[in-house]
Length: 454
Ligand SMILES: Nc1ncnc2c1ncn2[C@@H]1O[C@H](COP(=O)(O)OP(=O)(O)OP(=O)(O)O)[C@@H](O)[C@H]1O
Image 1 (cartoon, rainbow, N blue to C red):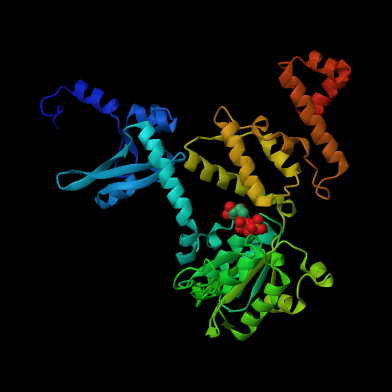
Image 2: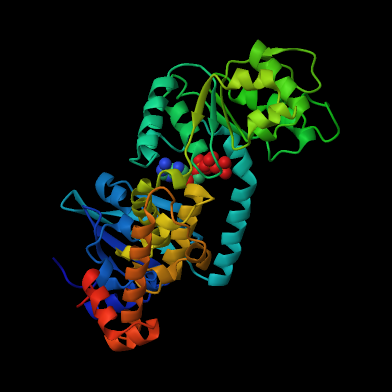
């Protein structure tokens, strides 16, 4: 193999590549990084020696370099989201003796000012089209394999999903916020016979009352001032043949509940401003964290609608009811977040799990994910420690009553405090005993009991 490029000495080529405005990465056929330039490492906040040999997807989020190294098909000017920025990426296969042996990729940025302008322009455009994407997106994001957890409750819910998915029966998913109601709704749709048809979501609590009817049933041209030319399809029409996910159904105003019930019972809808009825075929999955039974007593939720949607009740337990799932979720979220952020975590302090197990998780899995994300960003090394957890988690930790006896809790606490004092006084047992207000002999007794002598 030649070692110079057009007779330019290799050192000069190296200087050019290292300092190029573009960021450069080269992978072998297995998708492992064999070269990455310094500027790219600086942007990714990684150490070059650490990442050489790693799979490119473990270092650069959303990378497709390994795919190009496999297919041999170049990808030019592809928009790639890295560390909070949209970049333009080019990926070129490297061919030697007629065979694809790897790929090199460049990520383009020329003038940071210009790039910032372009980046925020792309972000605002994407935000604008997000609502339309949701309307036309026929696929669901999650499947049953994305539901993590080995607890009895989660395993039996997953079985239930498999049993009910194929039927067309309405499902009402109950559970606190952040327990995974939407995730389960996706899974039911994905396993149903309607999986190739649309899954359409509407958040009944987030849409102003006067717009909810037209959002659900659509409107005709000229139905009201500001109505779009040609009218607009409602979620029922968009979901025709598929599944309509009515999120936060407990927040639906009473007058809309009547209209919804009619649509469900008759399988027909009427757009706002139209006199014609349209047949629609949708499966309903509804979700709420509201106490519907109490709301029915108070006449805030219609009983007939409740019985129509609650054919199969489905209750997702709160996080604190299935603490045994925390280790799985912790591992999963660390992987997900580090892949996205490019940060590396290779150790979790044992006490972190103790704190997690003692906290009551009112925000459930969503809160757990946020806490892990915060800890990953707050840690200055590659380890998640109790110190990197938000204070409120540590301060309000509650013991999961019913799981441990008082004696065990006291012993665990005693052990933790002893350990903490030894750490603080660099294993000086006398200093630790003094600060804890116990005698030297009591200290030694306790250290022996908890196996902390060394
Ligand atoms: N069992 C699980 N395994 C993995 N991730 C989960 C699980 N349950 C929930 N999540 C994740 O937690 C987050 C919250 O889930 P989801 O939006 O489905 O909750 P929700 O109950 O619909 O919340 P809300 O009532 O606030 O809309 C999502 O990022 C989801 O992917």
